Length: 429
Image 1: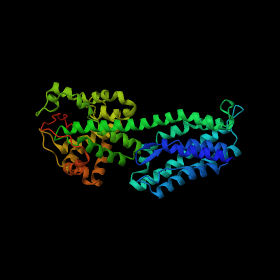
Image 2: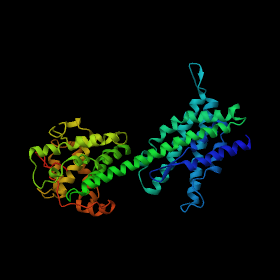
Image 3: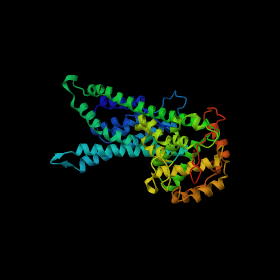
Image 4: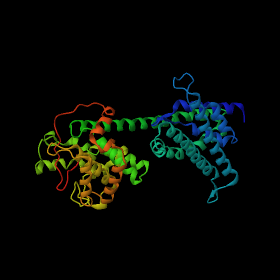
């Protein structure tokens, strides 16, 4: 291996740090793995980890947040992933020839395995460290930051082979050095990175916008202030106790936060009527689950997984709910969970026509409606969670004191939501 080869690929690894994509939970994603995997094809297995250790600059020394131990960890973590993937690649190439219909596909198979190994080692190490620093669940960190990155690792595997071939073939059109071809290829590669960065920013901006709309709806009524947030906290506790994974828990939390977003389309004269509603007015209220899904349809690529919660959180176990009259297990699980959290929050918050119930009384009423309005198994689960959970969500006044400072002040009105009760129990707001 020539010195110019070593320096060139080292420069590419250094350059990759200036094009990284910031991810949630203090993590980031870059094209470093592309260059280390391409170097794996071109050079002996000891070269990629050495390149990473020497040329991987995760933070500038002049950066006020620079910490030598963080930089050292990043080098060792990325170098370990590079070493593991290089060893996996060379083991397969030398010991496990693979052919399909007589065609040797060992290189393609080896680089696919190496990409997977690089992903697993990289993400696992980062997730553990972020967990230790933030106390967030490892599975949640994995899902939020890297669930969609695995596809990128695998889809970009052919690019790794292309980079290596472009460098080693030295096209005559660009002189006798393949580095020129690689440099030209960096232009579309940079724009691919730009797309990833914009996708992350767009998702974050969308989530913040939806949260703001939800907070605005809740803050219009003193009885529903922080309603959606409390429903979300309660539903998440139930989802965890049910044993759902981090991805599904995230969906439930997001759906609970915006389950009432369709109320933005209900006239204020109906939504804030100080007394009980007429049948016609109640019919207007019953449109909000469907309207919420219609409202968010243009953003379905980002939030489709929450649509069942938004649409079906007012369905009942006995089939007398709305909008479709689903019964029993026809009602999606996530919606059944949120419906219990929603009803509990509404009962303990009270309405103009009904005083707030104590947490104990609300729990007893939910248990009375097991098998009627609510999934009986989930009601048992709710009692278990209610008994062992801290009082931060069980008691509404405690919850408001704890969470008010976390929500932007949007002002509140003296008007009240007058959504009527169901025939056998208070319908949640």
